[in-house]
Image (cartoon, rainbow over the protein chains, first blue to last red):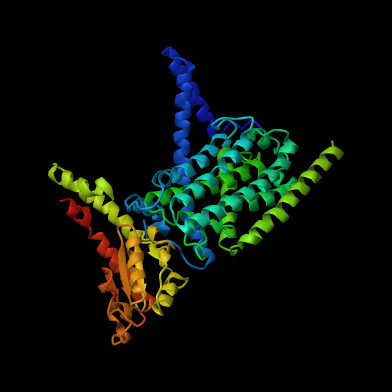
Amino acid sequence: MNVSYGLENIWLWFTALLEKLFGWFGLPYIFAYTIEKIIFAAALLAFISISVLFLIWMERKVSAHIQSRLGPMHVGGWHGWAQTIADMVKLLFKEDIIPAKADKWVHRIAPIVVFVPSLMAFLVIPFEKNLIGQDLNVGILLIFAFSSLAVLAIIMGGWASNNKYTLIGGIRSAAQMVSYEIPLVLSVLSVVMMVGSLKLNDIVEAQSRVWFVFSQPLAFMLYIIAGTAEVNRTPFDLPEAESEIVSGYNTEYSGLKYGFFMLSEFTNMLIVSLVAATVFMGGWLGPKWLPLPGIIWLLLKTYLIVFVLMWVRWTFPRLRVDRLMDFGWKILIPLAFINIFITGLFMVIFK
Amino acid sequence: MGILLDEAPYILEKMPGGGIIITSADWLINWSRANSLWPLTFGLACCAFEMISTNMSKYDLDRFGVFPRPTPRQADLIFVAGTLTKKIAPKLKKLYDQMGEPKYVISMGSCSNTGGPFYDSYSVVKGVDKVIPVDVYVAGCPPRPENLIEGILKLQEKIKKDTIKNNDRAQIFK
């Protein structure tokens, strides 16, 4: 599976050039390494921003067409493509309100804290075999570890705003995310058992014959359900339920701080879809008869899953709080354990 | 909006070529504000149903970037849709005060414009402009969705004529 026409070739050529250039000037390797990583991080940040701008526009168009509307049509000309840019510029120039009795510092840093974990998870996602921030041995574990930190920021925002609705939203989010973390990890655990490695590149390469979505269909279903709950999207968007608690944990946030909450929400959705595409749908692998760069295959699969998540969001109503907990603890977790047991049984029998 | 929009226009005005920067910034800010009006979900009486209908499939306000927000902190626009009684007027004032600058008000229907058919009533405020400043008045009892859409387009025209040199807080600074 040595793909020789990917984007990674340009990146490898560039890094080799940079290292050679630094070698000529007699500088140690660590300088070249640092600059490479900074350039990679900047490219990643640009990718995330552009993806989120596109995803918000896509969400509005998908929702509109599901509800037999048209969605944004006027801003920027073609089908309102500049709608999200207008929204973001407006949020940038909007008044930044901090409530008088809020815990000011916690209120200020919560939007930053919510974005950092979602950014960190991109460190280990392989866009192509060598186009990766850092190919860690514990890649998949690191993604889940960081994505569970987002709940901290949501509680911070909910508590610091000094408003009963934000507090209820934050506490709901804590209960929900802690509960659904377990089936999320357990569903991926069955895949990890089959591969025998937590490294994401190993998981991708193990799917060169058959994707795990076919050999582990139950795990894929559990992952998608728990992942939807993990990023607080409908039918699990209880932390920001408009009909019950005004806007949940971000009720008191205005302007760019709210923009950051929205940015991290869509980044989290992107991460859930990227991990689903990597772990279950073959990541950067594509059919051999169609030589396209691996990153294109990965993004195609990712956006397919993103579309399914949007479809689900605008089709199903919201769950009740107690039923949400029942569903998580009484159905998803036993199913995940059964899946692990069956996987182990098959591994022993067909060794 | 802080130092950037309060002080910068007056410093730029004195600099050579500063006018170009002001007009470019005006264009960008007004374009974004006009095309991203997020209204507060707030309805008082029967006009609210026309407002809801305007947001729904047939008329679809989302085409113009109008996207309802549940919380006043994130809203730019408030439709006063319906009869404003004296009992609810303080709540409307409070919600208006909770919105972040810049904020706009569309008074929708006869009741909120002037008191309308309840002009003689002991309990009705005779026009919402007695409580909060209004940008656009939409006539009708209740106005049809087309009227409301025209009101929004008028508000967009009004926003596009605005400039960062004359916002209220800047006047205080001066």
